[in-house]
Image (cartoon, rainbow, N blue to C red; front, side):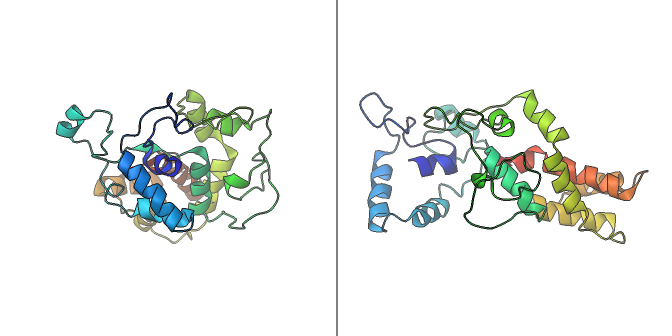
Length: 242
């Protein structure tokens, strides 16, 4: 149930820490039982469970709105589409490190504070203090370590945008990615490669023209490129799963 909720943004049982009489009923009890039984048969392999869910036709659906289905099932309890949802702060930070080539893939080891400027490891290895939660984690909805949290609550505040605009960490990622392009690289090629690396797609003609126009403007080339990369990194497309 928790793994399903992680991938779909909604759980089969909406009270993941309460399967008792006071908890919510599952929307698809047969599916929940089948996944649990096969999970046990596959030796409790989480890799198998993740793979099974991600390869399902349900997960591969589009996130586009269907007006007819939306009127019948506005909460999407029957999974007629995949919800567009925001990345949690850990995945968002890790993705920035990955696309900028700064991610340290080492597995295991001691925790490192997020405030440490040299911390390039996955966020799961960051130091968590029970009574002094890191400000970046806190403003992005990370649960308080002093209590139980059955699921991640959605948080959307102006502080998140201020952090995205002014964070040294994000600017360092933008600078590292901008440095990958030699001075002789054409603006059109830069825009194409950035979209492929950051968004995993080709830019539209309008997006390409806007990017080339900005990069061709007045001012120092590298500064404009860093600002352009920064804008792509803090965009909604990078922060949300479609």
